[in-house]
Image (cartoon, rainbow, N blue to C red; front, side):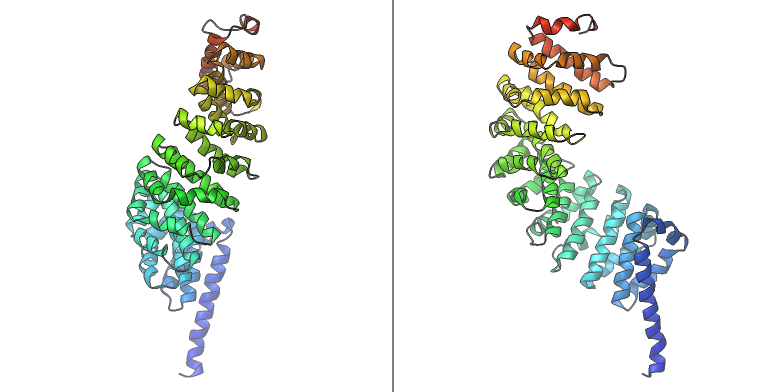
Length: 427
C-alpha cells in the first residue's frame, strides 16, 4: 500500500490519540467536568471504545472513568448509553491496560449511589470483576477489588450479591499478594462487605481471620487503617465473631499496640475494634483489661481530641459497666480525669454524653467507686449539663442517669451538699 494512501489513516490515529489524551488530562480537574459535559464529551468518546487501536480504547476508558468519578450525572449517562455494557463485554479479550481502566470506570460509576451500583450489577459486571481478581497483573486485581468494594459498600443486598459471586475467597488471596496497594484495596473491599450484617461478615471471618490479623503488624499505615476497620466491622455483629477475632490474634497486644500508632486514623480504627470487642461480653472486657488495655485506652483518649476520642471513651464505659473489679481497673488507669476533661471540654455533645455514660458506670458500683468520681468534681459538671438548655436530649438523659447511679452509691455527704440547692427534684 502506497505511503500516500496510508498517511491520512496514520494522521487520523495520531489525532484520535491526541484527542483522548487531552480529554483524559482535562478530566483530572473537577472544574473542567461541566464544560466537558456541555461539549458532549460522552458522545465523542463512546465510539472510540471500539477503535481498532488498543491505545485509543484504553485511554478512552481512562477518560470515561475520570469523568464518571467526578459526576453522578455523567455516570448515569454511561449506564443509559450502554457504555458499561460495552466495557464489560470487552473485558475478557482485552489487554491488561484496558482491563484496569474498565474496572476503574465500573468503580467510578458504582461509588455514587446504590442505584448506580445496582445498574452496574444488572449490566453483568460481577463475574468479570471477580475473574479480574485472578489476572496476573496486580494493578488489574487492585482495580477490580476497588470496584467490588464500592459496589458492596452501599447496602446489604449489593454486598450479598458480591459474596454470591465468590469474591471473598479471591479477595482473601489478593490480600496475600506482595503488592501493598493490592493488599490495601482487598482489605478495604472485605471491610465494605463485612460492615452490613453478621451473615456477610461470617464468610470473611471463616475465609481468613488469621491472614487478616497478621497484617496488624505490617509496616504500612494505609493497610493498617483498613485492617483495623475490617476487624471492627467483623467484630461488631456478635459475641461469636468477636470471640473468633480474639482467638485468631496471636496476642491481644497486636491490636492494643495499634492504639499507640503514630497515625491518628490507625488509632481511631483500632479503638473502634477494641470498643466492639469489650462491648460484647465481660470475658472480653476482662481479657483486654488484664492485658493492660485500660491504661492504653486512657493514654489514647489523653493524646487525641475530637471524634476519634469517642470509641475510647465508650470502651472505658463498657468495661466499667460489667463489674466493680473492672471499674476499679479503669479507675487505677487514671481514666476519671480524662473522662471529666472530655465532658467539660469536647465541643460535640455526643462525646460529652459518652463521657457522662462512662463516669456513671464507674461510680455506680460502691461508695469507694462513687467517691473516686466525686473527688474529681464530676457531679457538678453532670448537673450543669443536665440543666443546661443547650444540651440535647441524649446528653441530658445520660447526665441524669449517671447522677442517679453515682448518688445512689455515694456516702460522701460533703460532695453532695453543694448540689442540693441547684438540683431539680428529679435528681
